[in-house]
Image: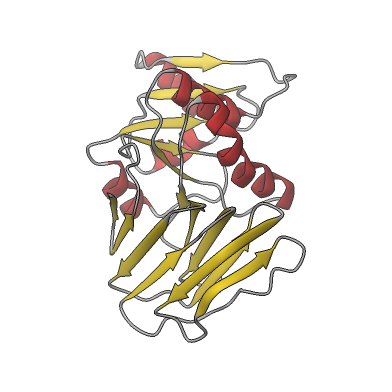
Length: 236
């Protein structure tokens, strides 16, 4: 079993997962500074391109900067270089996105586990790429299961696994999304509309906008790749 603790949240996976030793701050909607500081405490922070702006605005010094410098503020990039922080600069014309490069580095360097934040907001194609890149990162040796901030959290579950999410402040929405063609044996309790060994498909994502009934939710999956989404705000 692995337990991941976030501000006001505790997530228990039934399987052994790598520790969340790295926080990857991408260039999407910035998380609240106070939330990011709590998440970053005791962990290494990697800034991905304009994620460096988010870090410096929150007075967090990243341990590494990765990207092509096409969206970060020039002064932020220069400030990091002046402090002697390692910078991985890539050309703008490349096959992988900046986040994919960070995930590849994570796995190839043996770190494996991370929380990705700064992924919400902005263009749909960016969000789509960010989420599915977590699945693809397995080929590089990374096992990243959490994408989120103080408003939204997405957790990845694989066949044969279960998890429990306990909270201080309940989410207003809980949704299940099949990331592969089909997810079999989906069971969820602690919600207004529970499921027991249901089959969910990618083509008909109906299991959305469920509501919590207590202080925790339990989920299990027999086969497939599934995301559980928890949202705390309609204004995302």
